[in-house]
Each structure stands twice: as C-alpha cells, then as structure tokens.
Length: 482
Image (cartoon, rainbow, N blue to C red; front, side):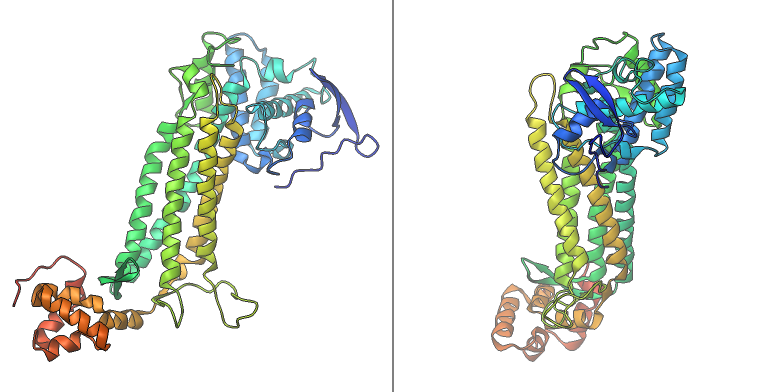
C-alpha cells in the first residue's frame, strides 16, 4: 500500500492546527490522525511501508484500545458516553475501515510511540466525529487522557504486536498446509516412478520420485506441527497493564486482569496476563523464537526449491527428471529457453526471511534496561516474514507444484545406466566384486548389468528380481551368494 500524500501546504490542502509538547503544527483537515502522527510522518521516511500495510496489526491496536476503554469504564474511570464513542471507533477499524489513516512508517524511533499515538489519534477523532464534534476538538475526548487511559506505548504496542501475529498466523498455516498436501499428492502420483537417488550430487541408490516428493511433504508437515503448537504458547502472554516499565503506574490494581480478559473476549484469542510485567516489557525472547521458526521454514522451502530446479534442469543437458510448468519465456536472447522462475522467486523470499531474522535478532539484543526501543523493527520483520512466506507458498503450490509432471522413461533409463546401481547388487556379489564392476563400468562406459552377466556373477532371473523397484526402494537384505 502506498503512503498517501501527506503534504500540509495550507494553500493546497485544507488544514487544522493542533498542538503538542513541541508546539503547533498544521494537520490535513480530512485526516483522522493528529499532530504526533504528523510529526512521525515528517520524521521517518525509511521503509516506505506504513502501518496500514499490515491490517492485522491495525486491527490488533484497535482491539487493545477497546479492551482498555471497557476495563477503565468497568472500574469507574471512563464515562459511558466516551466508552461508547471509543468502542464505535475501534469497531470501525476492526471492520477494516479507515486503515489508510495509519500512515506512520513501520521503522520509527521512540519504541513504537508513533504507532501508539497514530492509533490513539485516529480512534479519538473517529469517536469525536461519532459524538458530533470536529476532528481535533480534544476537549471532549482526548487521545492521551481517554483513548490511552491506563496505558503506555510500552504495554499497548507489544500487546498489539502479539495479538496481530495471532490474528494473522492462520493464513501462514493454511498456506503451509496446502503446500504440504500438494506435495503429498504428487508423491502419491509418482509412487511408481523409479529414479536415481543422489548424495553429494553423485549417483547413490535407486528410489522413487514419489518418495522424494513425500519427503518434502513430511518436512513441511513437521514445521506446520511445530508452528501450530508453539505460536499460542509464544504469543498469548501479554504485558497489557504494565504501563511504562511493568510496574503498572497510572493504572488501577484491578486493571490488568480486566483489560486482558476484555481483550481476549474481543479478539477470541486465549490471552493471559504476564506473570512478571517488568520481564515481559523488556524481553523479546518470544519474538526471537518465533522468527527462528519462520527462518527454519524459509530454509526448508529454499532447499526444496533448489532440488526442484536441479531435478528439472536441462532439459536436454541436465537431470530432466521432472517438468515444471512453464510460466514465462526465459531469455531475451536465447529462443526457447524457459526458466524455473517460481522456485527462483521462492529462493529469494527465503533469503529475505533469513535476513529479517538476523535484523530481528540484533534488534532484540539491542534493547537496554526496562524497554527494548527496537520493537518497531521487530514488528516489521515478523509481519513481513509472515506475509512473504504466505504468498510464496501459495505461489509455489499454485504455479509450480500442482503442475509438475514426471519424465518416467528418462528416470528409469538413468537408473539402469547408473554405476550407483551396483550398490543394489552388493549383498549378492560382495563388496570386492561390486567395486571392481563399478570401476570397470566407469572406465569402459559399459553398463553394470552387462558386466555382471558377462562374468556370470548373477543370472538374468536373479538380476530381474533384485532390480524390481519394490526390492530396491525398501529394506531387503539377502544372504551373500559368493
């Protein structure tokens, strides 16, 4: 999403004046955000990615503000009229409206204060409008005094990050599950396609193409299971109620429990209050672990894509065991060339996610004392990695995996020509004979089976039995015949 034009030239855009600690500043009259958001927009021209780019984060911010308002009302600190207006504003945002007003860059100084104030100001002005007042008429309902009551950026923002990740991770898991299933389907379709397995890019022993693709499905299924089990454990403990550093200053002693309960009810997520709010305010360990799990998934996806590119290489001068769906012409100078563009793109996404993990790790380490000021970068990298992986897996499944076909005859021919086939004969002719046959085949260019028959090491019937696919791709130990 492109950042909207935020110019404030009074001659071209109608403005209203707002004031804060640093003085007076014009804000676009049509904007629901206010002066502190405007300052942040003018200060931070970095990633070019505004908060609005991640709708689940905006929704989570609105949910946090609604939960806080409801808790403060229940405790007697916020009147019913303001509560109703704030709730209306938050529900509007939760429904997906006015997200374009979240204009602050994802990377920002201030430990997320600009994000928190962007939410406070938008909610305040939506609430004011609902009450019949003008935007910026904060005497009736104030971004700090009312929307931010009993909160600090330091508890509202990290709580919203965790909640936004919880709200958005289902898409990631769904995309991963669909990709796993597509690979498993291909594994079943290619269950009888015999091919040569390889280690260190050298011929090893026979296997089926189905086994190879099933292994891809299995490894992604493992990550799916880990993510399904670990995400709630990592993200459901929130520090809402800790306010500035975890001591809960400026909040009622009963507020933390009520606010978290209300947030759980509003979001439908199994949120629990942090046991140690000071620790929870400063520690980024859950984000580091989550990012590490995303990195692990990225590494696996990249490895799978490397294998797909190798298996489809050629077509005449490469492995040519599978055909990837042709997606676009591959060269401006080489006619007929078609490149594996989908796996290549997934590789690059994986590299980006790996880089995101490193940036996040450094940000988590870079905090000092009771607060980590690098949380905006942590949030940006996590939401970015989830978005990229979700899209990449969907693309890989839809535009590549589902359309793969096998070159079965070519795969079988390479098995029969491979010197690696001698490994299957090893238990029957002995290691020394197998080594000698392999050397002779390599030097002469003759086939392993031809040499074995010529030397009468095995007869045709025995060879046929040994080389049956089902006997080469599963455990089978026979008594040595020599």
